[in-house]
Length: 49
Ligand SMILES: [Zn+2]
Image (cartoon, rainbow, N blue to C red; front, side):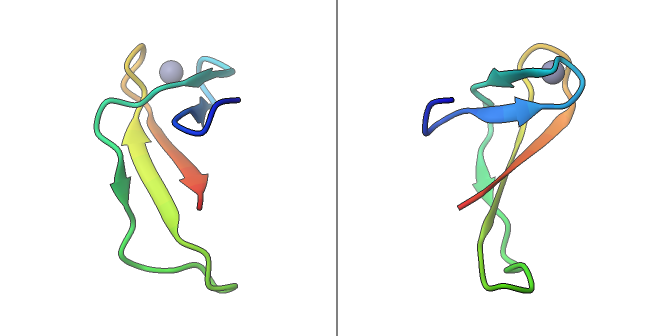
């Protein structure tokens, strides 16, 4: 999986989302979530940074 890819649970594949945004709310362990939309099916994708 490349650095700019998110895993899409619907496609069950790594995709490069078109509209990546950092989530302003950090997770409990202080990580930042990055969110995007799968270019194939439109499902929301996320990745921990
Ligand atoms: Zn998808």
